[in-house]
Image 1 (tube, protein in one colour):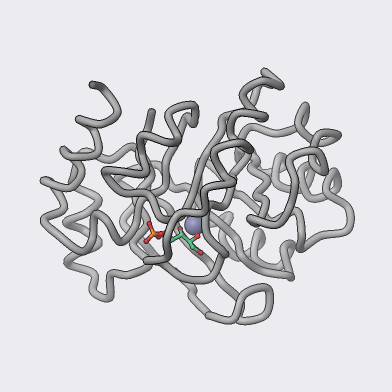
Image 2: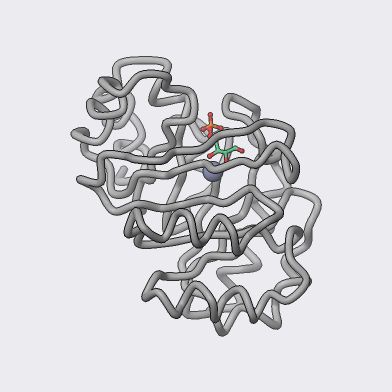
Length: 201
Ligand code: DX5
Ligand code: ZN
């Protein structure tokens, strides 16, 4: 299982650089438009020492893809709930040689996105309401991850929200965990070690 670190709750560049130099696999960028979710957050430049995993919580998906493709991300993930033509957005992201993720909010069922699974590199299951860090993990997520695993598609399963050294045990079937406040509210290296101990034994 890989760790994608979210720096949503970090407010200075030194600490973002400190995080990027830790033993993480990806850097998770939470982009919010103040419309799809209440909060607003943009990241116009970032240390890209680690592959970038961009999570768009926005309605104007095309506008934000155009803006963020220049950061050379590995993944761009958009929300199923924000678009009308999912396949068209998938094809648009692919044109730029960027891997494609589709995210579902806690209230959206896995069954709704089954038609799109063959075309995705990643499915991001939200385990909190999108919009802010530091919220508690929603238990229904565990079943959703199980379902996505049983469907045995060619996509990675990523889970985002409320992951700490306890809840990480519940999402063992996921390929990538996004972790924000658990890491950033303590000693980054030590917190990441704690998570890895729970992953590997
Ligand atoms: C929530 C964001 C998450 C969030 C995770 O809308 O998508 O990436 O920052 O933060 P924690 O780990 O604090 O729940
Ligand atoms: Zn996120």
